[in-house]
Each structure stands twice: as C-alpha cells, then as structure tokens.
Length: 336
Ligand SMILES: Nc1ncnc2[nH]cnc12
Ligand SMILES: [Zn+2]
Image (cartoon, rainbow, N blue to C red; front, side, top):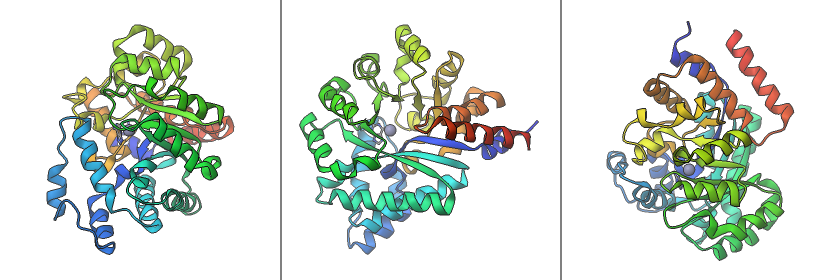
C-alpha cells in the first residue's frame, strides 16, 4: 500500500483558500523591504518567526497587515505571487483560487492597479510556465464599513472581468455577514461568485447569514457550522463547499489540537469539504503539509485523502469539462 506522504505528493489538487499576502515568507519580506528602503518590524528572520505565535485571529491579523506594508510596486506583488506559485507547483497543485486584500494596500497609498497587475501577471506566467490555472477573488475587509466595500467595488470596476468572485475576510467577531448584505447583493448582480469567511471564530449564526441570507457559493472555514444540525443539513443538501484550513485553525487557536478538527466529521457527513493553507507563511505549512498533518491527526484513510483531492476540483469555480479533466487526472495518478 502506498504510504501517506507519497500519496499526498502524488495527488493533483486545487487550492481554494489562500490569501496571497499570507504566503509572504519572511525571507522575501526582508528582501523586498531592503530594495524598497523600508525597515521591517522584525530585524531578523528568527525574530519574525518567533513573533508568529498567535492566540487568536486578531493577533495574527495585526502582524499580517504589518508584514504586507513593505509591498509597494507591481514587481513586489509579482514576486510575492510567483513565489507562492512555485511552492504550489512543488505540492502538485494544478489550480488555485487566490484571495487578495486590496483595501489593505490602497489605504496605504498603493494604487489598486499596482496590486492587481502584479498579481495577475504572475498568475498568467503561472499558467504558461508551471501549468497552474487560476482565479482571483477580491476580498472585502470586514472590519471596514460596507460603504468602504462599495468604494472598492467602484474603484476596481475596470478589473471586474478578471476576478471570478469576491470574498469577506479579516476580523470576524462583531462583523457579521449581514453587515455587508447590500454589498454582496450587488456583487451577485454583477456576476461574482460569493465566498465568505464564516464560522472561523464567529458563531453558527454568521454561517447562517452567509449561507442562507446572502447565498454564499462557498463558505471559508465554516468550522462552527458543525454546532448546528440545520446548517449541516443545508450544507449537505446544497453541496456548498467548505474550505477547511487545518494548520490555520491550530495556529489561531480555533482548535487546541488537530484532533479537534471537524474535517473528518464533515467528510463523513457528506459535506463538500476541502483542505487549504490559508496563510502558509504564517501557519507553518503549504497545502501538502496541511493534508499530511490532518491525515495524521485524524487517521484519514487513503480513500478519504483521494476524496479530499477530488473535492478540491469539484468545489472550484471551473467548468464541468475542466473538473472532469482534473478528476480523471487523479484517477490516472492513482493507477500509475
Ligand atoms: N484566517 C483568516 N481569517 C480571516 N481573515 C483573514 N485574512 C487572512 N487570513 C485570514
Ligand atoms: Zn482565510
């Protein structure tokens, strides 16, 4: 029987929950800071890594926003994205749907086009040079107002055709999805897919609002859905995907131990759950490390690992023909 690490390495997969700014490795951060003549908050790599010990989402977010402040030029955003793509390719990731947080850059005076062009150019190169297809999801920061979200929607108008969807991230508690109901209704009208972080730290009520009231196409995290039988039933019936991020959950103390992850229960309940890295530079692992850690903790079978890889394509925003192509690629990899 193939061993677990070999199976994970061999499986083609999609990554659907990845904040590109959360893939900013401290080595690259220092390099970009130096060329931009900016002082980083941490003087050494060791200092940076030592600071990556979080007891909740907000503690992480404070450091995450601080880290990305060295990104100023299109080349910086290109380099950030390219570094992630090379790492993803090494994990046999064939398709990515990445979030970016434009408001975290425009509020520092970096033009929207600078950010978007750098990311989009790297993704285009990712397809031609690494064979990784991609989509971009423009995320609204939920600690800001709905009006700020509408302003971003207007500012990004000329790029809308290049984004598959919109997201909702940042500080969850106190900022429920319902705060953005009008904004997401407008985004739906414009044809965007809707992906909302919900139930990471926030209560099941936030998942209810995202899933039922707003009609999310995917729920990011969604851990706390498992506290509500009604939500589980809707998630199963609608096959609305959940993007689970095991190492993120552990790093942010959403769970105290990976054994507490709801992932296996979600699989066994017939939910369309996927494995993702969220902010790999901060949480200690890219996608394969997330598969490995959660499989070890929950003793997932090889069939369950294959199911997770299949789910990653089924849950992606790609055509049925492309999904079928990737699913048969998994069958071929398993037969080889
Ligand atoms: N895990 C997470 N939750 C909410 N917002 C985020 N932004 C980046 N990572 C995030
Ligand atoms: Zn996230």
